[in-house]
Length: 501
Image (tube, rainbow, N blue to C red; front, side, top):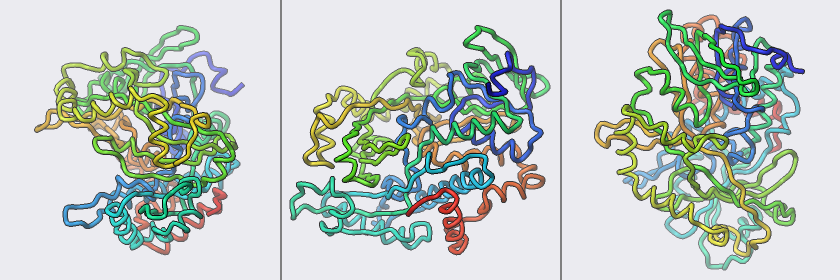
């Protein structure tokens, strides 16, 4: 048995406690154990396996989000120009993730990278003259950056037939379509990656992993350490664990855990749970006609996380096609959570934020109601905008994971809905929590380095500096401003991760 599972109970004190067994906690645990192997670290996961929630393969799109295809990262400004600043930032962040994974492979901490990452072109596809012009301008602006070097653009039906034959089948010759294609795109199985890191931590590090252990209340002690109530869900045993530093990476449950800490920085935060559903096809005849992740624009009033896309997925060595996401609604904060999660999250500190966000997002509420009420046949109609001759018998509905969208305090609106990922840290840097859903797992390494900078700032500048540069060679530099370094880094990660673009 793994060493951590031989332990009946956790120790009473740890230097670091990480709550949740997803991509975020395993990434932070791996970084910390590399930066200081003497740290005593514990991970508490309430389920019986790592990566059962948001990090699970079918609970996300598996897109290595690098802003190659996501049009909401490149808005058109009032003067008609395209703002690529967010796209560049996200592209940089994914390059950091790839460097970290390449380091783990190079050190032989994890093996067989093809099991969790595969080359898969990322494409944007739009319909109509106006959107084609937007995409042309976007391509022109993006390709001025080294991070988007090699991106192709076309409106030519013959070229599109080569790129996306499944989508181009039955199209009329006079139909205006435009697409961009980036061969550097990837498909990532974050579930397998998380479990590979977890296995390394269990077998070869000082990190102790406790499955079926749920962290509940967090209380700040007089000595500035954190008291955590931990429940062994198998043996119904409860105990107190004290930690110098706590990271909350518990997906949707991060919000109530953060609230229990009573830190001032947590005040006003609320959460709105959104689930997702996919149409999935395992018909290999269809699969062989679509080797790309193809994103288009979100419909009016739809949240950015609901951008329609038709993707190749490679899960456990098997190829499938995925279309969606279609929004769903549940009051659970996790897929394996409780229906009381949403009502129990409402309190005097965040009720104004929640009401304000709801009042100013009534169109979004209407959109979600419409999505929830959709039949499979109605979902198929949306798919047929991509695949003209899609047959209902070739596709099945698959429920994805739960996401909790952040609701933040806002002086004017009362509260506003946020669609990004946010790290919340107290002023002493003794507790950090990750909130939000997108771009999520793809930028886990960047997000966890942010946690290290905010909570272990002096060490990052001094004794940990050389090691972090070994792990992430571009640390502290912008690849967009260093073309030679960008090429060097991409060649390095391509080789180590056995990518084939």
